Image (cartoon, rainbow, N blue to C red):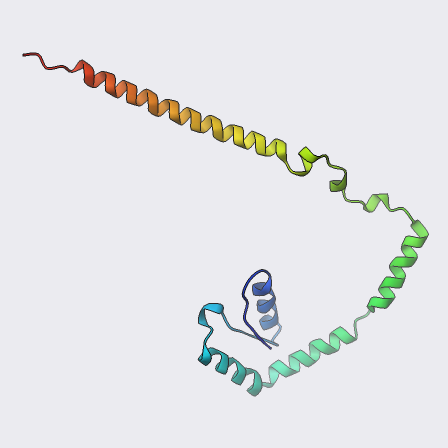
Length: 141
């Protein structure tokens, strides 16, 4: 397997595939004819890639619990207990202000406003103080 990660979780997935020994990664920045040819040559000539891919394929096929068995178990569980209030996420019961963290955002915006206001007043006061000092220094002839 030859991977070229472009965006999202592809970077992580390609690193995992290389770590498990069934893939060769090519970085997007170094993608050219030579790197692709070298990667193809590496995968075709080195048996470890095909051995690791076969091993992983066998592991997936011989999973201890098959998806169909898992589906049956969860269906039986739901049929027995019906309502599962203890498994409902707490986030489903939040109001709009809590869900979007509007209260936190408002406090942060207020803090930024006060900091900017304080800096503006400080600079204005410093300018007034500077200008009033320079106007007092009038030359006497």
